[in-house]
Image 1 (cartoon, rainbow, N blue to C red):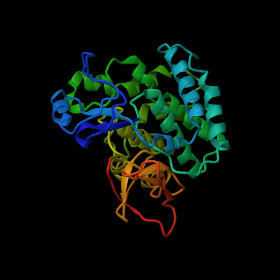
Image 2 (cartoon, rainbow, N blue to C red; image 1 turned 60 degrees about the vertical axis):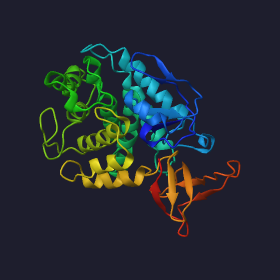
Image 3 (cartoon, helix red, strand yellow; image 1 turned 90 degrees about the horizontal axis):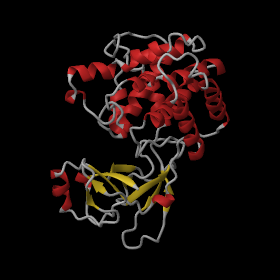
Length: 343
């Protein structure tokens, strides 16, 4: 199943999820074979994205660093702890200590050198949190963090969006231009609410608390809530990783492509350039499931990553015989290069 822009429809795609309007009424059922003529009608109904069946999904093996079951366990454990937390209730978050140790241990024991996949992401806060935790651990490893320093950084990541539990604004796939000044204030206040909720949590290191407060700050002082220019590496790490994943998942902004997300964090005034270069090497430019065109004129779908973030393994799309499978590892000197993205 793949998320698709209605504007990209070419016809003959098969719906994997029903198309519903805001009032819940179903416009198109699962299994509907789409026609190009539907584009205009769906656009008129303000339907911008749909989910279609992916005929090559069984070949695609996305890399999220952790095995899928392990990733989901961490996500569910985090949700269980945070969902039972009450504002300023002392020690109610202390179960995070064991989750932090487990996350760092599994990260250290996992020997994964392939680039990460960031595609078909939701705006789920817990999924977002685990993803940026992985990115921050990758940066921490490159910067030579000790075990203790890594654990403090991971705790800051797990707590960074705690303030969202105390506000009512929907943070998913929105534009600041559409918010009232009061709504914008409330949304941006989640950083302060998260920080103040941790004031009496003496077991939380100061650097972890500072990461919560400053994850929307920028190096040039253009961020919020205090327009601070933080010097701590942990703060710089969560700022760039949060901005990157928010762009891809649609947290606090409209969803962006991988290329747009990298453009965003390539601003040397706002983000640390060395960190951006590390992420470029760690995150696949062409995530699994991306349809691409190669320099030999053939169409293909990316099925997995290699150690080279710009050279994945692809499966050539044979329109005449879909049962005829041919794959190629592009991480070879003689392999063709990708020249464009189809969708």
